Length: 286
Image (cartoon, rainbow, N blue to C red; front, side, top):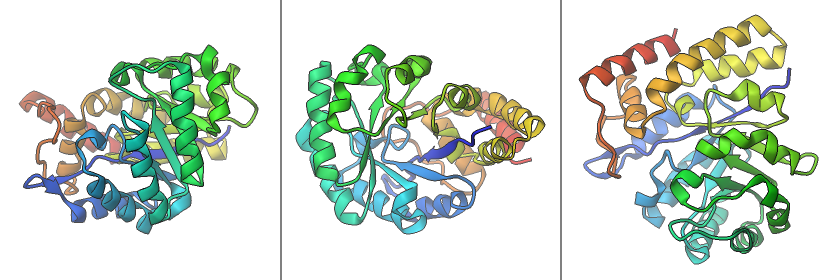
C-alpha cells in the first residue's frame, strides 16, 4: 500500500477576538511529530476573516515549527491582486509550497482560473496547488477543464466537498505525477487507490492520531491496522468535520484552544453536540 501524505488543515485560535499565537504554537508542537505537514490559512483557518498581517504571523509560526517542505500556505483570494499580496508575504517568510482556491464570489471561467493561478505561480517561486471547492467558492473547475488550467503551472490540486467526489475523473485528466489531495477526511484509502497523494484534513488538525495510524499502517502494508484506523476515522469525521466550531471545541477539550467562538458567523455546538464531540475525542485519542 502507498502511504498518504497527511496535511492537517489548521484552525485559527482566537482570544478576545485576536489571534492567539500561544494556542497556535501549542497545536503546531503537538502535530509536528504526528502528521506530514500543515495547511495554513485555508478554509478551516477562517482565512477570509484574517488580515494580511495575521495571515503572515500564522505562516511564520508554521514555518518555524514544520519547516518549508512541510507547510502548504493557502494564498487564495477573490482577486489576483489580493492573492499576490499574500503570496509575496509568504514567499518572503520562506514558504515554498502554496495553494490557492479558485477566484470566488463572482464565478470565474477556466480561462479566468488559468490567469489567476498562472500569476500566483509566477510570483511564488515554489510549488503551487490549485484548490477546488465549488460549494463555497461558486467557481467550479470540472475535470474535463483541468488540462486547460494546467498551463498555469500548478503541480497538483486539493479538492473539497462536491469536487472530492470527482477524484478519479480529475486524475484521469491529469498528467503522470500530478498530485491530488482530498478534503474528504474519511476517504483516504479510496483516494490512494485512485492514485492520489493524500488528504488535507481539518479533523486531523484536532485529532491527528487516527490519521497517523492509518498512514503508518498503509506504509507498512498492515491491512488490519489500516482497517482499524479507518474505522475510528469513519466515526470521528461526521462529528467533528461538520463545523469549524466543532473542531475548535475538540481542541478546547484537549487544552489546545480556549474555546472562543469563530470570527466568522458559525454557530457554536449545542450541549448534545458537545457530548458527541467529547466522545469522538476520547475515541480518537485511545
